[in-house]
Image (cartoon, rainbow, N blue to C red; front, top):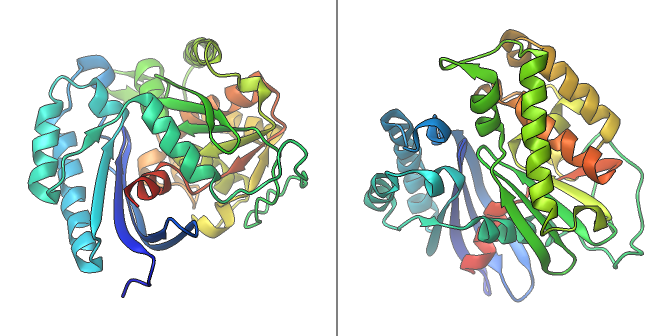
Length: 335
């Protein structure tokens, strides 16, 4: 039963590495979002897109299998409105029409292949709607790497960074977006471009591979800074699986725990320590981390390096980690 004033909506975010679903009751008048179901499946839709320019048949089938599961959840919960947003991989692919037809057949809605700027705006809305704060004088709270704390009154403007599989979005804003830019560095793209040879990821990568990847990330940051004042932000907010996984590792969680990860804070020194370990570890060592999703084992090093490079570039002492992101922004847009 949906409460008065609320609308039950479903939001689907299909990225380069994962596809995610949020079903929630939202009330635009009060700003409330009541989560009913949130789930994620690693489908690696962007497999080899950077090299071939096309979505691989097996990647499409993995994605369609997840869509069939999500369609059942949406039917069971009775969402009145559904919005399906597709991001980096499907923007780049020559055969994205195959993807569109498959989604329409399964879910009955056409995926919207949004621009990087639209992606950035959804991410910003989802991540910051509940942060509060009272302008640049907002009270700072000490770094809490134990997780599970409320964000409190964080100083504005925010820099929201969404590190995806194929791209990273940078958004600076306070109560609204001031500037945004999407650049083509993500954990999957960087891994496939710099750390893989003949389809196999180096285990661990060489110093030369890491240096080449770092140079690529730094060039992307130069590009982002042409339009987004990255260093003007007072609070860095990090989104998506690379960032949340770094937080889980920082807290030494016995399993992935969204409640403890959401609004946790991780210092730059700790991010550097974790990144360096990930980049010199083996696949087996990374897979043994209890909070590590199997689908992230081979790309987490690249994702962590993107986060570290951003923090070093802007001088951020810590990152505030958010589990609320583009999915929540999509849900609000439906309402």
